[in-house]
Image 1 (spheres, rainbow, N blue to C red):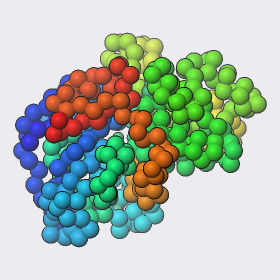
Image 2 (cartoon, rainbow, N blue to C red):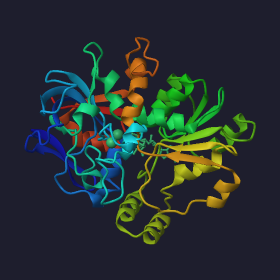
Image 3 (spheres, rainbow, N blue to C red):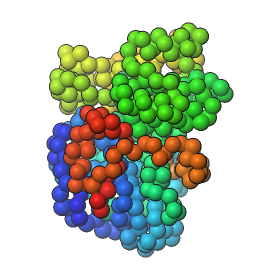
Image 4 (cartoon, rainbow, N blue to C red):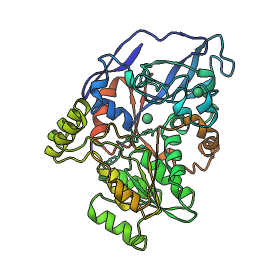
Length: 393
Ligand code: NAD
Ligand code: ZN
Ligand code: ZN
């Protein structure tokens, strides 16, 4: 089959790889109809390169049609249209039963002390080949796969695989009081959805992102937007009686945009011990935790900072005394996808499209164009927000 493979930092290629096969009774093979590129893929593309091996198949946001099932599968059958969660969880262990499926004990990757295994994250999270491919093997498929109807287009359902539960969890963890204020940092796909969810739940939402096209998309959904910098922090503070918003969702995570020196420094951080990594970043004038520090600065006293964005490693010290003095509540984690999908399904299927899913995908491209699509998504060019790849295209 054809699949997108990692070949080196900022180098990916579509090539022939062996078809996946059923390996365990609770596996299923899915023929992928849509598979998206995520901000997390950009971390693998760039900063986390040292943890990948050439030939690893990337991708973790997918849906398609069941092709084949293992002998233990009872909930789905060949021909069913399904969405695939990016977290691989059993649904039965201590953590799964508490809605913490991203901590599933049966798939947890103990070697690195990370959480549950994830699709397409190479040896960082369990070495499960990814979904930017024609075919995908899904472990624990009986619990994971979500059957969906035939009428709505893929883009209505696809984001149940990751960014919709991620944004939902981010806003839930933000714990905005009724009628309160929420700042969203980053208007990539996750931030777009987090901002819309916050507004849908009655919060006043103010969002920051440097990319004009992303601010324009958010503005179409009633979000107040700002470009990053001192001005935006001051403006949001002014709008919140000088105190700052009740909560901040950080939908940025570690960023690798900017100068070639910044790119080199980000790469170095993946390789170097913390202190050296910090020195490399400082030399390049980059604060890899810029958004996190903005969040901690901006949130009102006693408010909550909810991290949807992913930060790898401890590249900068955290202002712990300031956090203590402001009594900041800090929440974070990989999305517990299956814990939220039953709640989200009616919103996804609502004919009025309250989450605006019809306005998120800016590009649908053949899988063969994935290398150019990664480049576009990383540079945030051509007005791209969410890019979906079509393996049959
Ligand atoms: P993305 O890279 O498209 O979005 C990041 C956005 O942040 C971009 O629009 C960028 O312009 C903006 N940005 C950069 N620096 C900023 C700053 N200082 N202030 C404000 N905005 C800034 O990616 P995405 O797909 O939206 O993902 C966002 C983050 O969420 C990533 O870190 C990704 O790894 C993470 N993520 C986490 C989970 C989870 O389970 N927790 C799931 C999916 C994605
Ligand atoms: Zn993702
Ligand atoms: Zn489990």
